[in-house]
Length: 118
Length: 109
Image (cartoon, rainbow over all chains, first blue to last red; front, side):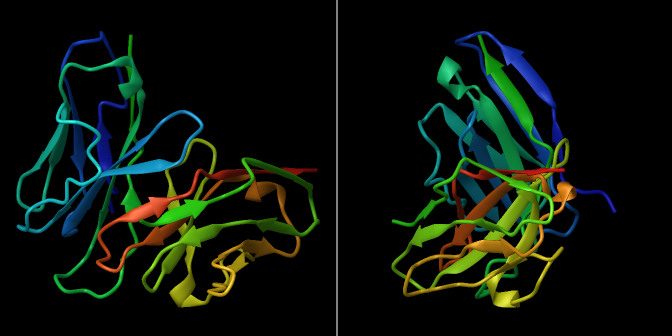
């Protein structure tokens, strides 16, 4: 079956512009996560969506970052007024996590969007 | 706060040699730990998780709560094991993974 997909695969933008990154999770997966990976570093949690619950935005680095998810489908990560330090690979992951599940289910990752801010 | 540390950015071994990728964590609750792997030109994928207590591709990892470690081991490395390996820790709510910085394993012929 289809895995997690992300678009675009690469994005080059100028400092100060807004960008939108898209994630299509695996069908039926209730949970969706966004991570950022800067060059040579590990993954940094950004935001988590679970069903219709309020998202966990605790990892968003600034108010220039926001994300939305429509139901249990597509999510969009928006970065406003991009800065050079926003350059990174943005990874999306999804998992099937029933409400009240006591354990973390396997996260399935997309290929990422490589963002370069000039 | 939870934290995962992988002290080695690069580990280079010869084919057939044993390999151990180190992972230490800091967490006040009951930890749930994972190893994820990213092969060249592939996406990040789960390798194993400690609650499964299984061996995947010859790799095993034991949770040592006393030493707060979850080292990944394989007795005989293969060239196809060359990849980036990330150790990750889940919080009790199960809604967030904290990743280590990753270790690049290179297995030389």
